Length: 215
Ligand code: XMP
Image: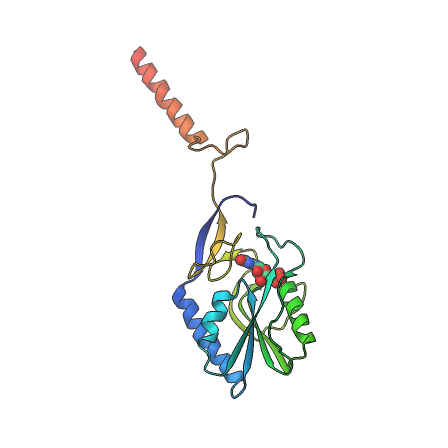
């Protein structure tokens, strides 16, 4: 998708559907970490709301840490390697760590994050993603907990996921679409530019008016 105007397309998962899935995910996580303290590492900014909603459903002792990663900058095509802008503030050595990310696409981001966390020698390391794109991944990353699957060709926004830092606040998940803009012959966008169809309809009306006057 180019860098033109965008609009929200089809809603894939509503607020209610997301909340119901979060309840299930929390139950799955709790079962796995019963009687243990869990350290959740949120990969920001995309997993901000997902992590916040998920950890508040957990009825086990939880510590929370963050990592900030940027990979798309202001577009919908990956800008190259993920850039890690902050590092874990707390010590995860010997702890049970669950890395929470917004979406698994090529696998590069999560693989990079896992490598970094692994260096800190946690007792155990697992991953939880809100979304997983159905595609062949560049890097195979193990995912223990997954919210939903989405089509590879769709760029999705909402519930923490953004396009140029926008749409994160939508309470639902939707497909991002290119807004239709009317473009004139010279390629410049023209406000109210007439389409071929309206032009020809107008000239037909004009012609018939002048021919009836002639009669
Ligand atoms: P990789 O390819 O490294 O990508 O697995 C993971 C990161 O890419 C971003 N991403 C998206 N962000 N809508 C978004 O808003 C999407 O459809 C999308 N696909 C990938 C995201 O930041 C994720 O952490």
